[in-house]
Image (cartoon, helix red, strand yellow):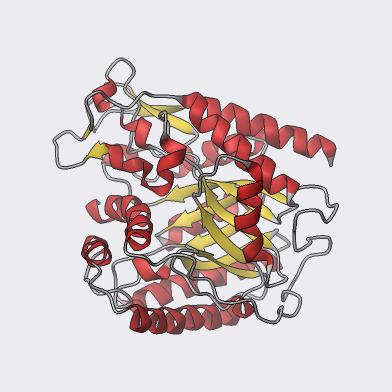
Length: 393
């Protein structure tokens, strides 16, 4: 249970830690554009500002699944089915990024999304286990994605997310937290790390090709990953930048178009307090997890602001639409283990959540209680944007 929680939080810390020790802008130099993506679907352009397209091709949300930190928040098939239907009918998304670990959970969720007519972006993310287990987990999930594709479902397969953090042996450390400490301390041989990362990414891509014959991708952290995108059909970027103007976002994103391939923003989002967009992927760090129960840090406390979260998402969607990018997936639908506590700002963990829905416990503070979710302002804002975009097309 604890391992799942740690990985989710640590993803962002590791990215920030790497930037702090000077590892930034590490994309490969521009090379020859690869051939058209294997299994490329008709009408899905590369995406780029000023090309006269019609905005994003796919508009989605990340739906993260896992074992859950408590029995109350453990994965539930019934809850999942309700959530996927809400993603289609209420959020007006046409794509769901099904990510997390557990082959049965991943495949059941992907099948439900496909049954409801959603485009499925299926991405296994298993960490802190031996490399062989990660690859086996990838292969089994990919074989299911191929079965869905052959049955006529609209599905793409991502071989994983930010391998440098999730896969032991690329960065020193047996656990995510060990690897974070090594990143922050600078205890990393960056050249050797990149060689190991390149080797594993190529191995995962080769395996992905073997089991899945549609379009293949990977979710990268551009500050660290040096991905040879010739291995993939779609460039995938987890994007948490903050700028004060649209032009700066466009300048930064254009570098990812140099491969001549569709660009998918595999994650973008922010937390639910004033100043969260400026914190980028470190927004979750306002929580002191050493306290029992965890509590929001600061005196004065950060100020909860659903409006801040909604405004940032709309600004980024406007940028992505204007650039005619291939896909964008809001991170994320819900963080069930970070409940909203109305009237108790010190313990309102939802402030540190990237979810566009908030978890409400039936008995606040009781981890074993039942709960439900309610949409935040960001949910309504994204739903409106997706609905308007669909009407334009």
